Image (tube, rainbow, N blue to C red; front, side, top):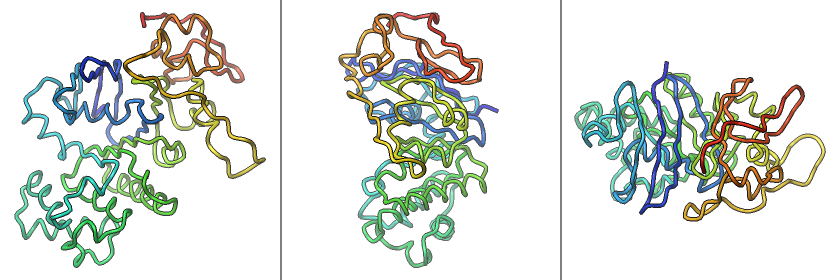
Length: 330
């Protein structure tokens, strides 16, 4: 059953369009990965959906959460969804936590707002949440300040704060980026465990395909404000079809087999103020033709169940190239 349905979501800053019509569904209990290089629009998609962008942002489209439309509705309606039905873990816990308030008090604010708990009950529940996310000696450390925790423990505090409203969907925005490999693995295990125990859905935003593969059921690959390929985790890892998705996988170092030189994706994500005509990835794509530079491919369903926006996809055994899709103006 669909919990969040995003349709034709577009975002502009000072007249410069950065999202070009995102369509995305999240089912109840599902784990969805959103991947791509920095600047592709992953975080902006969900900040826009939750009304967290600055006033200069122009947002259009539809975001329906559990039957409730968020775009264009009153602020109170959106605030009733944020933290309650949907919670978000931001990229940098150190800058997201208030340095002059104890972590227990900060978690207690969420508990009071979303569950109506008084100060005593809130403190007890904050201790329980800190214990749930693996903070040792939670009864004592609930009264400590953020600077008294390590980076990994601050991330656990942020997860505890997100769980305070008992959300149906948790959005984890690059939750392991600033952590070392061992702590990253622990946070991924924690998120997986919490999802299994609570039954909540999860959106995992990352540029790390390995982390996404460890925790998600489906992947949406974003590039330059568009979703260019979507599919199940197994089929995407076994056979990525968009040249950009293939490039992301080719740039991952392998721990098994022969040691081969990594294949980088040449170039950078285009500046939204100077988007190329046609396919946004064409200037970096070895398979691009003159046709790719003249028209933008739409995201279309494929025979294997995935969705793909490419005129010349990577071909595998049994695949047939779709070189004449219905095109839309760039």
